[in-house]
Length: 208
Image (cartoon, rainbow, N blue to C red):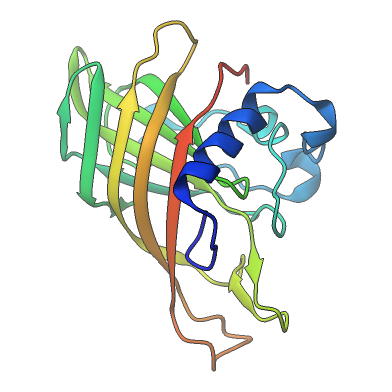
């Protein structure tokens, strides 16, 4: 869900849950990262290079627009809790340093936006979290881009609640209320910086 939507959060949560749990092949996006040019993210240490998420992204169809080529990476060391962790505040651009990604958490937005959160550790100590975002494009009714590959996404902030969900091979993004800024497109310099508000919620158990 993004700022322009008139959908209610309750409807969004139900729809997103059904979207992931129904397993209808007709709702899957069959375009792989090889053919759509998705650039997999990298963090600032070799040990934290991101995995190949093309299989995960191929299961999620953008309901509005197309999947962006870039996956954005942000990080935070401001968190609280244990089995259910809350990360909040202003996030840094890029990945956080560490030696191991101990667990990943998956969340999905109503329009097909995907959030992957990585728990980063040094030994047994959790030092922070990486947040990887794969967003869907969004245009105005006249075709001007609000969210596109030519408008960099920055200034990520907000609150993310994670749950370990031990029954799955991954954890869940239980809920999130986040915001970021879509910077000026050089091809449309008259368009101001666009505020992007996003909501993500949990998915079913998925393999990727």
